[in-house]
Every structure is written in C-alpha cells, then in structure tokens.
Image 1 (cartoon, rainbow, N blue to C red):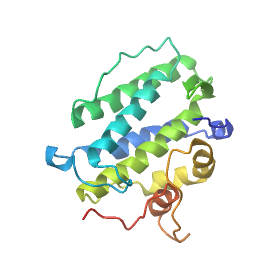
Image 2: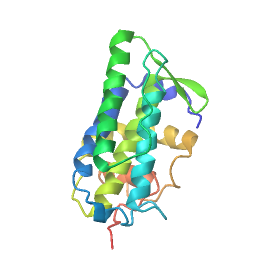
Image 3: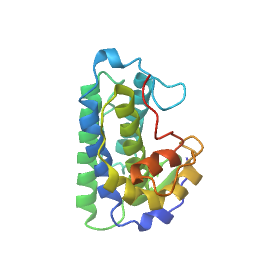
Amino acid sequence: MPVTSAPSSCPRAVELLEGGVACLVPVLAGITPHDLGRPTPCDDWDLATVLLHVAEGVDTLMTCLPDEYPCEDPGPLRSVADLRDRCQRMLAAWSRALDDADGADVPCAWGGVTLPHRTVALVGGLELTVHAWDVARSIGSPGPYAEALAADLLPWTPVLLEETAAFARPCSWPVDGTPLERLVAATGRDPRWHAP
C-alpha cells in the first residue's frame, strides 16, 4: 500500500502510534470467547476477523523496522492476550529502533517501498484507534476514550486514506461531530453503529 512521505513531517507520529495501542489494549480486556462471532461496524467482518486483521497490522509494524531489529515470527494469533502482548512487543521494538536512531529517521519497509518511520507510525495509529472503536462497538463497551487522539489524527487522515485504500469510503457526518465520530466516519463507519 503506497503512502507518500508527506505525513513524515508529523513530529508526534510515534506518540499517535503509542496512543493507538493505549486505546486498543483496554478494549481488548473486555472480550470473551463468546464475543468472537459478534458483528462489527466493518461490513461482513465478525470480531474474530477484525482481531486477526489487527494482529496482522501489528506484526507488519514490527517487521517493517530495519533488519538490525529482528522480530521472531509470532505465528498465528492464539488469543486476545496474545494480541495484547504483540502490541507491547511492537512498541518495545519501535522504542529500541528510535533510541538507537537518536533523532534520525528510521526507514521502514512498508508495502514494497521504504518510508519514513513517522509515516508508518501515523498509519498504525489510525488503524489501531479505529479498530479499537470497532471492537468496543462490537462488544457494547463504552470505550474507547480517544477524543484527543482522534483530534490529532484527523488532520493527517485524508492523505492516509487517499493513498492507502485501507478503509471503506467515508460516511458523511456533521463537521461539528466529536473528533472520534468524524474519524470513524472518515474511515467508512457509521458513528451511530451499535451491535444488534
């Protein structure tokens, strides 16, 4: 999935990736085995499918780092706890890479191209935040509480969506909606969606 380097100018991109994980992990704690077949705001995807998709994304965020930060193949997703652990290992790998870079850019292999780490971090932050919302809606949780995170992601969302084709077509939503409502609408979700 090609992405331009324009978002590489976002100085807080890695914070937004960390925010996406911080948004997702508490929501994961509310999932029971009986929830896995529940519908989600993602058309034709049940909760198990969303979780597998998120795990693939987290694994990609780990393996896109340069070769000097090798990551063991985590294999198939085994449980919700495994997904939570993958998120933490991914952040630890990013922390090591950025500490070693000492402020320099870290090139990431992403979708067949090399991109600045800030661009990849923004894509990851957007994915994790929106999927945290999907999971919360699926299980009837009131979270995630991500208005500030959504507000920070919104300015970068149009270019990321235009070039990644990772989400459904945007839904219309009033500009005076909350930042999280506007973010999920921009990624093709109806902010009013609730599990039946």
